[in-house]
Length: 168
Image 1 (cartoon, one colour):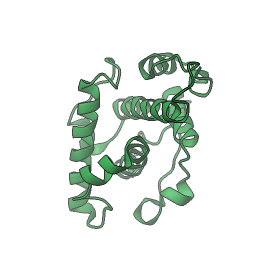
Image 2 (image 1 turned 90 degrees about the horizontal axis):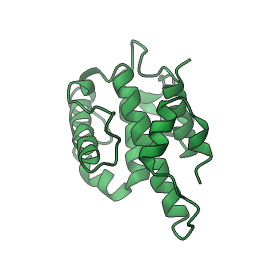
Image 3 (image 1 turned 45 degrees about the vertical axis):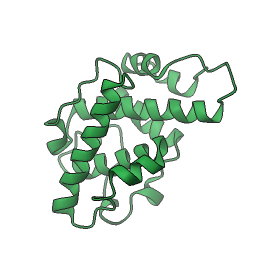
Image 4 (image 1 turned 180 degrees about the vertical axis):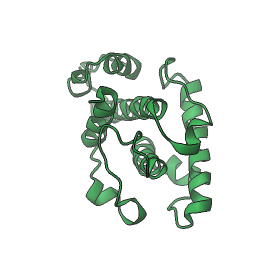
């Protein structure tokens, strides 16, 4: 079992991701499990649908603006590449701002096939950051939220999946 992948799936669920509602059309055959980026097929599609969901949860207006030229994906050959390039650019920006932890490596080449542990690490970091931002928005006046997204990601990366569901 892949604890990093499991934590990512848990984060998606906590944020309200439902494959039946969100993975429609060309995305409906994706297997959403802890190894979703290590299967031999649909890695790009898995990245596209889950990252778009996360970016929308992070900032719906920015998501619409940053992906207006490629979302929804209607011409897969063209829009898919454009989407992954725009997603990489946003992820790189988040990384440079310190929103993703230093141990997470974001390289353009990872987004060519969206396959393997690097993508799983990136997606866990992004989903944890988005989850943390959503919790902060919900509890903006509550001082009990003490952990930072970086602390939670590090703990999860070390195998502590419970820190995601027990923030505070």
